[in-house]
Amino acid sequence: MTVSIRDTRSAALYERALRYLPGGVNSPVRAMKSIGRDPIFIDRGQGAEMVDVDGNRYVDWVMSWGPLIHGHAHPDVLAAVQRAAEHGTTFGAATAGEVDLAEEVSRRMPSVEMLRMTSSGTEASMSAIRLARAATGREKLLKFAGAYHGHVDGLLAEAGSGLATQGIPSSPGVPAAATANTIIVPWNDSDAVRRAVAEHEFAAILAEPYPANMGLVPPADGFLELLREAATENGALLVFDEVITGFRVSSGGVQGMTNVLPDLTVMGKIIGGGLPAAAYGGRRTLMERVAPAGDVYQAGTLSGNPLAVAAGLATLALLDEQAYLRLAATTNALADGLQEAAGDRPLQIATAPGLLTPFFSEEPVRDYDGARGADHDAYARWCRALLARGVYAPPSPYEAWFVSTVHGPEHIERTVEAAAAAFAEIGS
Ligand SMILES: *Cc1c(COP(=O)(O)O)cnc(C)c1O
Image 1 (cartoon, helix red, strand yellow):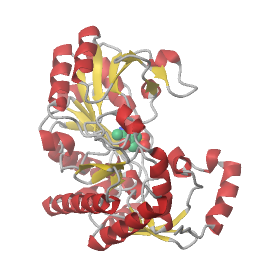
Image 2 (image 1 turned 120 degrees about the vertical axis):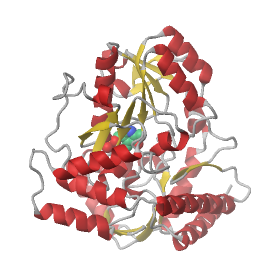
Image 3 (image 1 turned 60 degrees about the vertical axis):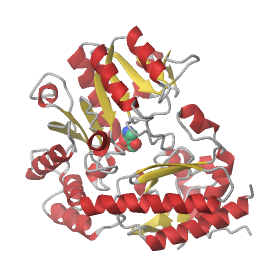
Image 4 (image 1 turned 90 degrees about the vertical axis):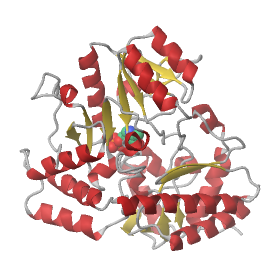
């Protein structure tokens, strides 16, 4: 049985939005084009649920793409933001909260002794690259196919043909010169990494240690260790983009979980607790190259914004050992439930504590080619059928599902039930 949702108000807003916003949205994935439907306009969120402008209610597995690890409108986070707002929303001057947050992040992330805050992950990765280039006196970057580090010119690069290739711009408007120093290597391909480091002198090897922007594709055994060795031998800095994984897969991100320590770490999403904040950090000697301690220029009007800092601190304060046990248990229960709902259909669920991706694929997905080879049309139909049944799954096959501390058995049950019905609707 095909089920559909009420969408009169969303449709009317979309029509207006198309007049003033490109594609009707402020960030592409929200348009829901890759699952073949129009965007849904959200009215409000509470805990693990969202309600759209037409009154449809959803279990939310997107959670603003990661920041909301305690769900929507968590009372502690709201109270912290309200308290901060009453004292003024921005000063462009130093505040105590920034020191508290930097100290807390440094306590959690093993390789981060010092950090600089920015307003977005894009800005943080752009700045980390600048610092890596300054520190090494080199320009080349190694990046993995399918990894996303924000819309930085030099990283909006696609692989050409061959195993490790010079990047070609993946968007019009990115100068070829901006990606000429970006070498692209397939994820989980140790030989390709070895060849690339034998051939080039890199400023940085840049990786999402658990890539989650081609869907979640965990590293093969020993692959992160290989990156660490390859960077050291090459004289490059190892930069982990933990914008998604930081404070999620463990208190100390992937580096806390694996003990593979990068030279620089890019953070975002959870660090701002649902408000715009991000950061890059590393050991003191490196970070003291950043102005005004050092000569590498980087600045931001709203960097370390008091509201975002308050939300980040309140969010981290709730992330204790219990919270991580709960996140891991909920992730496993969701993965088991989805697998069961799929029955005999080929569904490969990649998981890490706090996130997962169901690939409609016969084979486990190891790299970007594998992710691209999954059945995206089936995912699109399934995702539309889930939305119609009150489950807000990522409207793209290249994204992860984000688990929060406020998702519970009831949300899993509703999701698994809807998933089974959605599988039945789309056929095999
Ligand atoms: C979201 C994301 C970014 C970009 O962060 P923005 O705040 O959207 O600019 C960078 N890297 C990774 C791994 C991300 O998931």
